[in-house]
Length: 160
Ligand code: THU
Image (cartoon, rainbow, N blue to C red):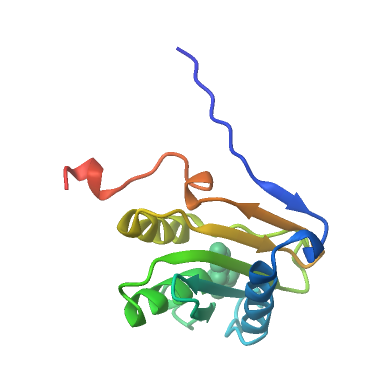
């Protein structure tokens, strides 16, 4: 039997049509990207997470001379939010990039980040809004990390 998945997302040419909260989150992600520690890739990523209590927790990618020891901006932000505010659901996550050579299109989180973010959707039983902005200004909005990771691995798969 053939099956097909449809993934819903929105695309905007600029931030004007976005709610104020999203624009603010993008602004904070942008500030974080400029602070990224990415001397090896020169690909700077900023992430800002808005929690249910309104607090915004940010992260940027942190690289290391021993390459695998570094961490993506999204996981820095999400893990920091979960460590500092373990009882607050994550409502939204904004991601922006700054890199001379990058295409300019919005950059979606890597697979490991998708899985890591998804954990908190499961934990709080609440979708996380994902807002991506590229250097060219294009914005993509997804209602849930599930849209980025349609076939998921979760604790349920282990019978937990
Ligand atoms: N990076 C992120 O911060 N987020 C992603 O989703 C993809 C990649 C970082 C990791 C590394 O510091 C640099 O970008 C190049 O891969």
